[in-house]
Image (tube, rainbow, N blue to C red):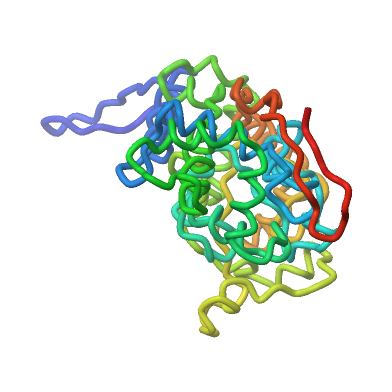
Length: 353
């Protein structure tokens, strides 16, 4: 590149060399490090500590269906290892085939979201568990006492609760169930090749994924999808440029957060989704089946941008780099404590042996 330069009345011509590929990659890495952060080792908080005893108990409770009314649905029913912490359904199915109103977000890395659930009606992982225990869709039990009575039918749980909550004279409570499951869920961190990239290993991402990262940034996706989760840090209206359902083909229109706050300013507002471990189907109603189509929809309805095939393909390559390896304590189902429980409407017993 040639630039004119004047010195002491004499016109000179200065040759400026273009940036090398290595310099371009270094600048892109610095830009990414300013927009995103790598995942932490775990998601413990001062008011939500992690202890081995709580994690072990919480893992069992997470996978145990016997807490629910007919002993056939567990947390893992909607948050399956095979689907990267979701269930692969447009809308999840609860007890007695009762439908949930929205898609199940992944439980992986979920403790880093600034709020839980699409509409922000759960404050934390622990709050989510407490409200799930009382839900006629998720659990179906009439009250907390029925859940505790159910657990007391499984004798092996009694010492596990005592070990997890040694200072509590009556440790088997709904609050402690939530604390234990929350402690387990706070260990479910999935670092990926993108975290190695952020740590300085440029080659951790393929050239195509690095190109997709640049397109992701330059298109404006990072306005909402940034930080440690590449999202999950704010609320945004779904359909800034045009109504979302025109692009997604959604059969029902969801009012979003407005149904929680009763504020019309929150109409069609949802928590921005984390893009780590992106798994099908997409959006709050599971209305889009493929990742390339989801990318095109978001560019269209949020930014007013029409992406070409190459741009879409590159962004998808970047997003795929955000999927990490499943934690060992989530990838396999634990052996549950033995014990039989009685269904309230049946004389037969549901058992794990």
